[in-house]
Amino acid sequence: MPTQGLLFDFLAVALYLLVGVVFAVVPLILSSLIVKRSMGAKREETYESGMQTIGSAWIQFTVAYYIYALIFLAFDVDVLYLFPVALVYGSYPMRDLVEVLIFVGILSLAIVYAWCKGVFEWQHQK
Image (tube, rainbow, N blue to C red; front, top):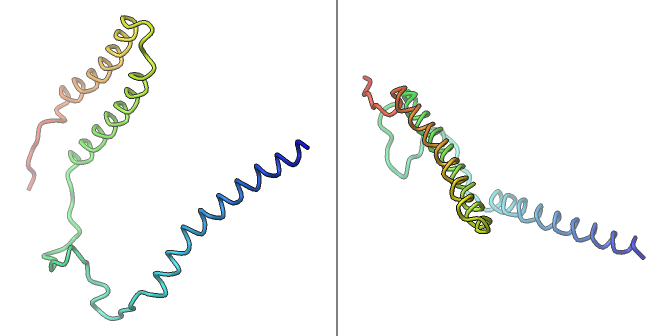
């Protein structure tokens, strides 16, 4: 009898997997059947919101953009850790507050370190 329950669970997982594959593959097949094919030089051009492109798309970005993105990503992920903490804590309010303050304090030290290194000073480069 336990084997039958295990088989039913396996069948449910296989069905979900099959439905997921169908939902992923069917739109790809339908779009390849419906799409209007175009050939020629227009196909190789860069498309930007219907506007004609001006100049080359190959420009260099300064490292500052990447540093801002990494700092944002790090703090965004850290904020996601604070949501479950806010839900779980509550039995010992003082201890919970101290733990959250330590966590936010460590994050603040990262901001202070980046500030001291001059990451937040914007310099325009030609």
